[in-house]
Image (cartoon, rainbow, N blue to C red):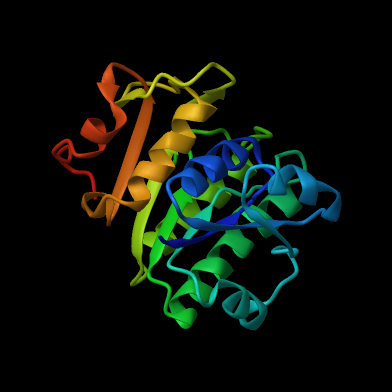
Length: 221
């Protein structure tokens, strides 16, 4: 049994992830901002924990993270307001990484997006730029940390049923079911071969476990 802390615990991906972890025997704490969402999270088998990561400082986050075996970042501001996007997707995410390191919790899985690269090509005038820029900064901070990190870069998320199969390094902004993203996160947490890797993926034909174990593409961390 592992003790997993999920930031963004009421998100669509997180609510698909939580029962997968609970069913295999993990103890899951789901961090949520809105107390009205406690019942939804509890229904997944996870334990809801109300905390506002946007306002929590490093010490508060360290206390929150302490005692867990792994952290999953699946939170986000949801787009719209650039200032809040930077506050959550970059600044709060980075604080949780530093908090995990300070608390001695080495395993950290970041849910990013498939295009998170320095050359992502998003126009600075685009409403999507703040998200792309914030996620890139958070990903780079994680890569430079001493944590046992994995960055997951799924393509465009859909509500399709799970397939249990993906493909790595697909071109463009490939689609992938949220349920398959949840399964990838769950598999990543128990696969040490994913440590220190950025894994970009979309829907495909390869079983998730086999895909994650594929040889790293040249040039990828």
